[in-house]
Length: 217
Image (tube, rainbow, N blue to C red):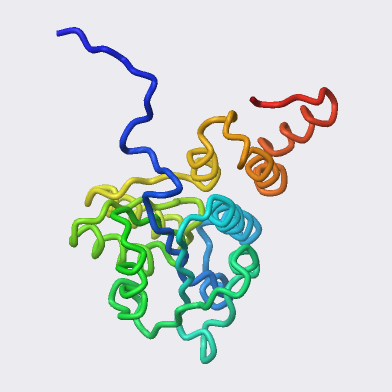
């Protein structure tokens, strides 16, 4: 049977309006023991995700665990794109078991949850499996997560994917939200984030714009 193609995006692609981003435990104490990704890349990728969400006005929950008594402040790269936003501090390792976080999830009312944070095997697996169990679609930004070892991170990702979570990367998240360079209202912001946080891709954008006045659109 013939299939007719149409110029429309697939339903599994994220849009700025269809999900809640939850950024979890990007804190000093958690980062000290993270070895699956180095601290520079972790902070850069977390900042990229936060900037992308703020630019596209994605409803975002920032949550910490024992901020004052044990784990320390959240990375400034994560909090600065959301000036004045309160952090939801928890005692539970599983964010999904915190009543204040769930109240905010329900207030936002999106059926898709995107997760990033520390550590993958505890603080990301917990809410991912819990949200999936309650019928949410779950995406995990793998390179904006980290764990005590590569083995711990990789097995945690395997476990979530086997349960139905969809893995992605931080740069993929930014570009999936933009998805069309003709969207002029977010073009400058997206390329600006890419230039500062997009690694080699960002260098390429800077080079093309500086040397040739190039424009993706």
